[in-house]
Image (spheres, rainbow, N blue to C red):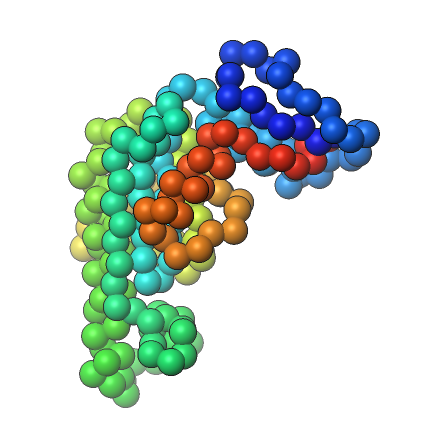
Length: 190
């Protein structure tokens, strides 16, 4: 069955059936769980992360409460590939000056993400869900940062994947993702 989700979290009877029921897979059930998490009136953290940028926000009751966009020079010119991915599987030595600079900027990006999360620690305690998007490699760097440890545990049960295609982490993209997560989407659920 295909349903649209109404803006009223108190009255679930406003969904509209548009198609005959079909079998729901785990992906559809996760989508429903994700959407139902934001239906509650509580705070949520949303983090969009790549190896070149991060966008973080705290979203409460349909409003952006806090946000921060962090960018760094980490992408190899004319190749479109981050220095972090370029160095995967290679041993040290032989880095150009530009490669060294990009690696330093990459480390600085993840440190700044953890600094911002540490700064928001009081607000993070009250978050109902922690939505995240981005490559696993980048998230491993955030959680393994030694200079400023991440204030959130990677095993925290509140972590939920965004599960939507995202563009570069910028404020406009953050607002788009939060709007979709908080207002619902149309798709198969049964």
